[in-house]
Amino acid sequence: TCPPGLRRRYGLRSSPSGRARPAEGRFAGRPPEAHHLVVGTATAGALLERESFLEALRETLEEVEGGHGRLVLIAGEAGVGKTALVRRFCADAAGRARVLEGACDALFTPRPLAPFADVGAQTGGALADLIRSDARPHEVLAVLIDELRREPTVLVLEHLHWADEATLDVLRLLGRRV
Image (cartoon, rainbow, N blue to C red; front, side):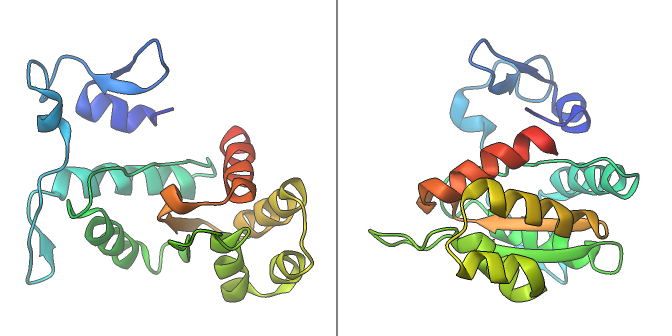
């Protein structure tokens, strides 16, 4: 689901499939390819043509700081600037929230729970121990939620299109509980 702030900002409404789609607003009447992010250029610390997206992410962070969990998906074609956007947001969020990062690998046989293993390596403790012990997704979820509740946290998981099934299971469960 799309956070209400993003839905309002971009005039999105839910389609029968449950996916957000443009309604009236900046994308109304445009072909689908116009809905994708335009590649921006980073100059002097600023991202061109990304301020509205950064502002939406900042608003979501304010909700998180207020004690409300949020799940945001940033999607787009390769090279449109997703990583640059996320890195800028994380740099801006430093000091306001802890930033934890994990990624999936482009392997024929992906590492089980790879992004959560990366997060466990950053946090140590129970999450790292659990990942090393070949835990089941629901076990990882319980410890991950405890870790995320410690303080406002931005959890960045990259390249989820390469995720293994256990990682996707944890994300499904986390999405229901955020």
